[in-house]
Amino acid sequence: MTAATWITPLSDGDRGLRVAVKDLIDMEGVPTTAGCRAVAERAEAATADAACLAGIRDAVAAGEARIVGKTNLHELADGITGINPWFGTPVNPFDAALVPGGSSSGSAAAVGAGEADVALGTDTGGSVRIPAACCGITGLKTTWGRVSLQGVWPLAISLDTVGPMARDVAGVASGMALLEPGFRPAASFDGPVGRLRLPLPVDPAVDASLDAALSAAGLDVVPIDLPGWQDAARAGLAILGREALDAHGELVGDHPAEVGADVRDNFGHAARVGHQQLRDALSLRDRWRRSLDAVFDQVGALALPVMGGPPPAVGPDAAAAMTVAWTLPVNLAGVPALALPVAPAGGSPVSLQLVGREGAEEQLCALGALIEAALA
Image 1: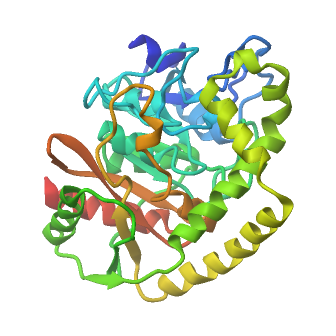
Image 2 (image 1 turned 30 degrees about the vertical axis):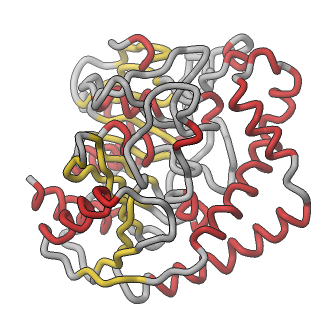
């Protein structure tokens, strides 16, 4: 096993799918560190599994799965590079010079390196989709509330989700079936796909790769205008910051030397979100959800990038080169999204983000499988 990918290697079961679990999710008998020294130094073994592990435990008992370890992450799940000063930075298996993405960095690296078949991640603002994009794998951000968060270390409770990561759509569907026994992709995908182009910086090669993938699949693609995406991203940041501060502000304040500088900075920014700014963000969230509902009356899914360009190199400037502006509005709306690798541009991974209406994971898997098959 690659050292920085894993916080706690395990051997639960000896047959079936190899499952990795982000170390934000409680496992009975194992401490949950949240990738943070301040937590790890005081952590005791969890007394019960997180609710989302019930299906996996049943699969282990049936010889259909085995848990191979708890994976590293961006500290407290509060970052998108995956760089961790305490447990090391997981190596991006696509290109070791590049960040693995966060916060579910270890989960993405484990799958990309072939050390796990399925990995569980969490996604609050892009933390399944961004590392999946960086590492050239597939990841599913689930509908908010579809997978229980009981026993999952929170970042922002109104945005947090648990979802599977795998090398391909079939693997993601298998991961969903572990989280939700009986899950299976829809038999087909119905409706046009809305191609969303945002006023955000994007590498032309990324757009070209996405358009080529949609064309190869023979989909009915229509342009969609969706004003307010960037406003939704700003509102999402305000809500995420305040909820993270409520959850972990005391920890960070009491143990600043045991929390990384980037995470301390995030909490400092969150502390400056005023009550009126938060009220405005919550009001915008309601309008944003209605706007997306109206769009999904026209199309079956939206298509846009996960990232506007290639992952940056590991280093102190990495965070400044990344953004959640492509992903966080999806969390604000509470809807699902699939990150799907498409043809690399310039030697770097490129990921197509497919967004569906609430509860549309089955349809997104069907659509993703259609595109994947066309590219193969």
